[in-house]
Length: 183
Image 1 (tube, rainbow, N blue to C red):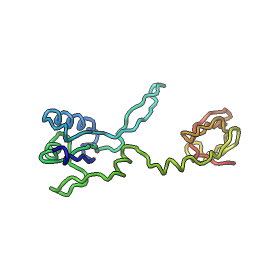
Image 2 (image 1 turned 45 degrees about the vertical axis):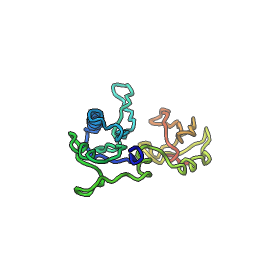
Image 3 (image 1 turned 135 degrees about the vertical axis):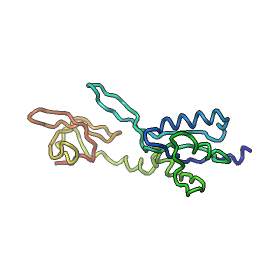
Image 4 (image 1 turned 90 degrees about the vertical axis):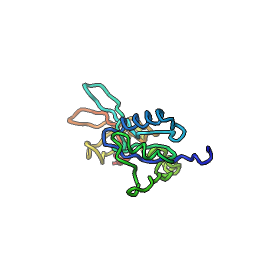
């Protein structure tokens, strides 16, 4: 039995805004029906978004792919039917009408789970093209066209802290490397 219990990742389409409810419903149903062997993970891919409200920073989880819930499952027998009958579930992604749900390719799963390819990590180790005290020009964002002086360099995040004169006052900005260029 255990041998053919191979799990793959599938995307369940849900009513937008109901992703976390759908996740909870699926988990409840699986436990109720004793199907935990077949479905190992239910995920709602989210990203942390920091909002400032009343002067306080609030980190909120924002759903990354609205309307999608990922499940790692072995969809045998009644399982697809059980999932489809859950409230707010529209169906599976990639299924032909009446056909089987189509599993995600590994590359798609890794992308959705935020596992970055080794390659893109290697290209980031190039030299830091800036030095502290250097004057740069902002080429992107709300301060496009302003000149500033580099105060700090964060190599890891590839960001600069730049002091820019705005209306005669010095203002620190955090900018990505790609948002500035040498003057």
